[in-house]
Amino acid sequence: MTMSRRRFLTASAGLTLLPAFATRASAALPREVDVVVVGAGAAGIAAARRIVAAGRKVLVVEAAARPGGRCVTDTDSFAAPFDRGARFLYNPDTNPVARQARSVGIDIVPAPPGQRIRIGRRNARARETEDYLATLVRASRAIDEAGRGKVDVACAAALPKDLGEWGPTIDFVLGPYASGTDLKDLSALDESRAPDRNVLAGARQGLGTLLARLAAPLPLLTSTPVSRIVWNGRDTGVETAAGRVAAKAVILTVSTNVLGSGAIKFSPELPKRQLDAAGKLGLGSTDRIALQFKGNPLGLSRDELLIEQSSGPRTAALYANIAGSSLCTVDVAGGFGRELSAQGDAAMQAFALEWLGKLFGSEITKAVERQAVTRWNANPYVLGAMSAAAPGAQPMRKVLGEPLGNLLIAGEATSEDFWGTVQGAWDSGERAADIALKRLGPVKEPEAEKPARKQPKQRRERKRQPERPPATASGTPSWWR
Ligand SMILES: Cc1cc2nc3c(=O)[nH]c(=O)nc-3n(C[C@H](O)[C@H](O)[C@H](O)COP(=O)(O)OP(=O)(O)OC[C@H]3O[C@@H](n4cnc5c(N)ncnc54)[C@H](O)[C@@H]3O)c2cc1C
Image 1 (tube, rainbow, N blue to C red):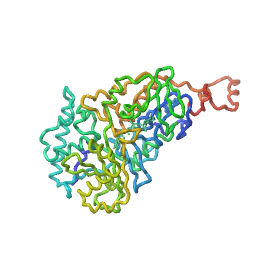
Image 2: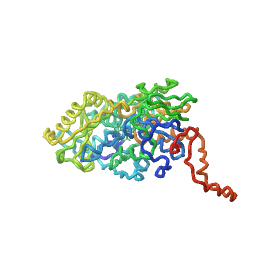
Image 3: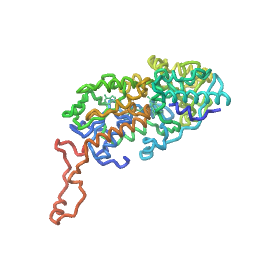
Image 4: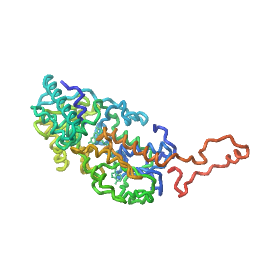
């Protein structure tokens, strides 16, 4: 029997017509723009699209070799697209990323209903699954209730004491699997603020592919880490090894762990308030071991999600036969996942095979054709998975996103409800862009683009003269405008 999606998945994990000037996928460094966006993940892409749509000059500066940030699809290695980071979009009917997918040729596909629970070498029986679901609902309610209390506590402290044999499974599903963080380190208030994430969908071509397509029309510089951000009003802009770009506003979207790492310098220094907020919203750990099998040795259906009745934190979640292929992934997360990924690729692959062997028989190891792992904690431009508020730190999300003059911090960690998701990142990017645009004021239409008004005959004739390409005062090419 498979269990209903409801609580399991709660726990689990209008720019089609862009102005013509913004049709380059990458660009040389301009001297000046209206807004520099640092980072081309979901937040950065959303912010930049908003700014372009408003007719302002934007430049996205990205440290990695490709846009997408924590959304990246490997389309080369396996029989199906392999989402190395985010894979599901929650509540697709209202999710701003899902709603734009069709405009860039991406199909949004509902995740199949139901997940399987394994108890050792057999599937859970109906009665066991019902028992598990009832216990899970009880645990979730207890965390929600604790979140309404006067003092914020760790989710672990809010759990009922009588979860019995399902205790470790629930610890995994509500903690590491949902947020990359163990329940003892998670704020009950933050958890209770998150809206239901019950309905899930994927992107047939991969969520990373979707983000890359949404980024494609933007003026974007890849492989260009920003080393310093100046936000003192007079000389606002960013510095990179390729040079400096001046701007009227900077939108910063790097992860909280990157922000806290000191990799980007600030002039003046970031206020302690923001740095402390980033520290208390550090990233959890989630990594994926991809295994392509010969045939279907696990005997599972297309896109089947599976967890086990575990006896401790050394557990994982399986996503089997992705898109009907023989590609399966094993997710490891939380404190255990962090320790495992620190041991390297071989240790991660060995664990995945040992875990699957325990559930399906050790012969399955002979059927492995190809494998790969992710190491998000070691990725210098991300340094983890998704932000988690420590007990007491829920208000820090708002603090982190407070505008600092002409520097605006966005990214999933600043979302007060959809933190840790692509949607939360996207919303935060749009919000930062709206603040920046408001401060910039209305765009002055270039003379050449003003709609023709009724004018005396003499003046209309002058307009028929050959058009000159529009140029800025600084001589910047017109497509930056
Ligand atoms: C394994 C995993 C599974 C996940 N699963 C889901 C899921 O199923 N559903 C979901 O909604 N969310 C999921 N998430 C979370 C989701 O991916 C993130 O919340 C979201 O993508 C974050 O977007 P962002 O723009 O805030 O940050 P990022 O994606 O981290 O973007 C920040 C960008 O800044 C760049 N950068 C860093 N330093 C610099 C610098 N010095 N100069 C310039 N650029 C820099 C980075 O390279 C990056 O591209 C998952 C995450 C992981 C890791």
